[in-house]
Image (cartoon, rainbow, N blue to C red; front, top):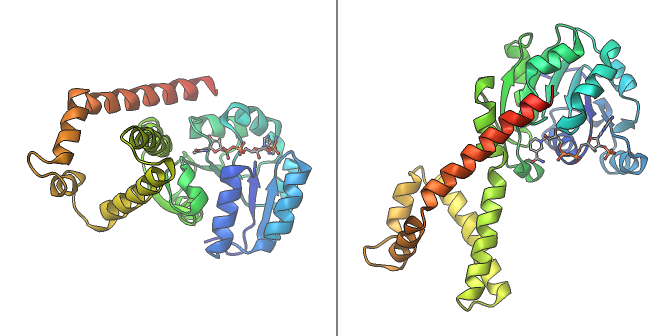
Length: 273
Ligand SMILES: NC(=O)c1ccc[n+]([C@@H]2O[C@H](COP(=O)([O-])OP(=O)(O)OC[C@H]3O[C@@H](n4cnc5c(N)ncnc54)[C@H](OP(=O)(O)O)[C@@H]3O)[C@@H](O)[C@H]2O)c1
């Protein structure tokens, strides 16, 4: 899909850099066809040395040079940045924004041209090639632009096309999702110590258990309820633990957490315009 097109990443921070690394590794784009920008010269030098790509602090030059442009800056400054580059966007640009909460409409208005905009919501496992990146199309993006974005996003995990109206619940589910798992691990680590496991042993057991359970969930093609049922004998240890979680209203708490995240995503989206 990229063919002879050049990829520019404005804001090659954690996520932007992960996308560049993924795209290079997957052979989606050649290193001599990538330009990265950020403000810190030292960080750009490191990118040049480690990845063999071109870098710049000049976003206008990047826009002149590249056809596919990833916007990887933080949502707070994104609209101002795009507006400051208004004159440098062209109708043949394909813009992929990964900024949480900023709608395609907001970006189209900030660009001021009928440019193809694709908006994605990756998550941090993209840093290890296991991201989940739902994406949606703006008004001027067609199937070919969506495929281009999907090719790029798939180089750091899975990508799935969704309606933009689902982006807030998606942000609350898979965007913030890794943090819920890490939080559960923190709680398990603490609890394992409290029931007498040495710290290092408890952590090692829990890390591998999370990895193993995730693999089983993905590979066994069975529902989580069925997988849980298999380790839950009536009157057994797992049943005792689950009864305690239910008595503490764990399911309702999880729903309340996602509702709060979804509400916040929508508030942040409104304040980014
Ligand atoms: N982390 C996540 O879980 C996650 C998940 C989904 C989506 N996202 C989205 O991904 C985006 C980036 O997040 P991140 O965690 O990767 O943040 P990050 O590491 O802080 O990256 C942002 C980058 O933008 C650069 N930047 C700021 N102003 C710039 C400018 N005027 N020109 C060029 N570059 C500029 C910064 O460069 P300097 O540091 O050199 O100033 C920094 O490298 C955000 O919009 C976020 O919503 C993140």
